[in-house]
Image 1: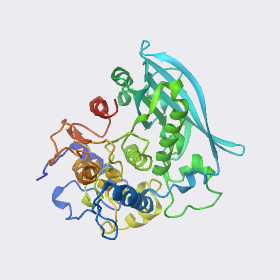
Image 2 (image 1 turned 45 degrees about the horizontal axis):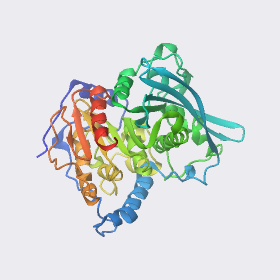
Image 3 (image 1 turned 90 degrees about the vertical axis):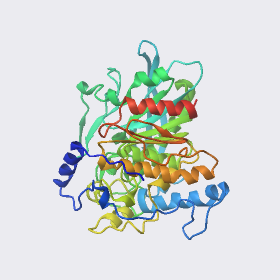
Image 4 (image 1 turned 180 degrees about the horizontal axis):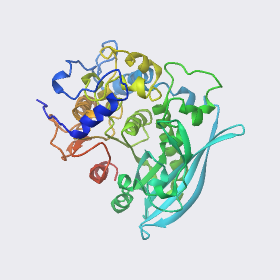
Length: 433
């Protein structure tokens, strides 16, 4: 039996914080209160037909699951698709310079979305190790601005959005390198990987109504409401990651990055984003989710950790209105939801995927994240891979396990640290190099 249980002061404190925020439902940190549940089979079509061949998965079941996730969780991104957009895109290269005693090159470039006389710019920062050939890369969004990734005074400082207040202000000089511990640029350069990142609120600010200040302002007229199944903020961030990949393809010779060997990654809400980006854009060669929790790698039906009501109550802009309507009630309808997190992970098959948790991050349900990886295994097996490598039990802390689906639960809090990145690099060594 999978009986690992983690109890921490941090988790109890977190529950008190969220309870003080007037949530309608309390988080559950008691395994005995996890309800009995039946997961939807990733290899059974919505109306009961079994999927028994790779061709059926590719041509029938995978498109069906994508449509279900669009309709019930992330929303349809049809307005962004080629031919449907009312705005255009161009890429502008800005600068380069040697860093870390010449071990790498720092690049800055921009994605520019424009319509008529209005334009929206996203700064992208890249670190690339010196190499005679193009290198693989990790690509992901950051929470506090590119200037917080490294202390270099030439990194452009963005306008920073306060997601709790919905206001913005110029970034601060003294915040340079503030989150360098989360990005470990020297590690990537030493291991032969590039790192590409952009400030997530630069694509769209992280609060309800933030779309009016991001790229989606081009898509809706003043006062126009989006449909219940249209893409919301997580889907917009995920689309932004694909646009970053487009830019890398455009500048690949200048950057020295191989766009066919990109590992899309994210932490917390950006881990949810990375999973969806990997699902909808199969150009990403590897997918990494770090502490993504509810709406990401954690099984929704377990009802452990964050209550499902947290999505419509506190983060209504993340997912589509169809999901908010389902969960925004005292007795949310989880049972009839035709999707769950193991199917989200399976949408990356047969590409390598890494799911990671932290022992003190009960809000994100570490056990539920492992179980999602475990229950994605049949799809990977059908497609000819070793799946989760025969692992049947959740591993002890700080031990990486699995096959082309890999998992670890790190000792510590809700964060991404060097231990995580070292394991991701080890994983990439096997599948990207």
